Length: 271
Length: 86
Image (cartoon, rainbow over all chains, first blue to last red; front, top):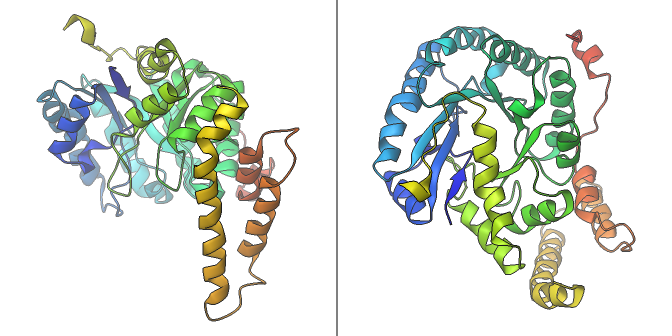
């Protein structure tokens, strides 16, 4: 089955991973800007990173027939540094017209601090000013519920079309509030700290598949870039229809991304 | 799948996961020192109670997630002195 991984940090993965993803049916990836595992020292580091996301990765992906899209921001962890964040916010517009940029992301909260909230709001203002879609990171573990609720509070203050915003890394206790508020939701298949394929399928069964996406969020830490096919297998084992599986792993991310002017997905069936 | 089929499929997995939890708790108690007053041990005990609770409201996973979560205060902006933008 063809699928799209809507959240995958390929700058941290090897070219072999691209090959494996292609063999498993992945036809497109969207890569949000994120934390590199260390705090960067200047805005210029981000300029280089954004070039990597808009120039290098699309070429690397194309070698395996995978389309590469991306989102730009300063991540929630480094957003604690307000001065650096504002430097990066000034750089972002230079890249918004690059052909693979879908919007602003993954912005959000990490430890739910005042500085993170300030920079989240400034990212939202940037997105609205440039008519960009938004992809949002929610915090980890014990911080997730509080942070998700804070993010929903802040989102509610902006006049943005809610169907152009995806709140990511939802789990059992946060998926309801996100969907009920009219946003898209993403589930991340991570060993130990987020959703397992089984629990993600449970969430689909409980909440339905409308506005719900699934991703691997593969990065430099413990993660599995080929986790989406694990969910496909779990849904098949439970007897779900192929049409429902396709909706979750292909139609939904395609429909969400299609609201961005730069999303030019080639139909894999017509290649 | 009906509940019997789900049970058939999940039984050995559940058994294995319960054993893992039991063995990890044994490991903690076998180790030097005493963590009986540790708040995390109380959280684990409360989570196990939720797992063993009745099935009228089958949202155990959601309840356990909330148990392990920091509380949300809808007045959080006051603490940060951040005004609402709406």
